[in-house]
Image (cartoon, rainbow, N blue to C red; front, top):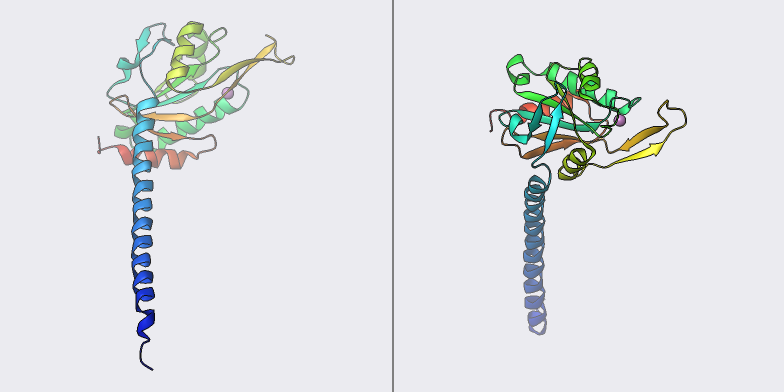
Length: 208
Ligand code: NI
């Protein structure tokens, strides 16, 4: 059967349409890819920054004190009954899974969002339960507020009748991994296993 010539314009139109939709699919995939990269760049730009705090030895410190190290930053408080100690234990295990040389390049920062109770002395005794590279940070209410803001961390004081001081702290529970340049590399949601964390940290080493 000869090809009915009257359908030719239709065939050409369909062929062109197919080409156009393939091109637009490619364009939207590219746009998505670019958006993903932009997301990483944006996150790198918005998480982290300047802060001034007091460490658990009583020394005033800033973000510059931790340049050159990989830093796991976690906002919590020493009176936290379960989540904070669990997360600190996971970070401790993650560092223990690294080689000695690797773990020596990593610091864990526990940033107290309960400076009222978390004095440097209180933090010193608390961090001694975890990896030796763990540093407790506290400060004035204003200093804590500023540091939480640069890390987009959330916290809120809530009444608690079962607590001797009558309050507890609600807080976000995200661990941020910052690079030796002080910039954001990755974050770990609550529940991340130590092995996953350890492998992720190791994956950045040697690249920077
Ligand atoms: Ni907690």
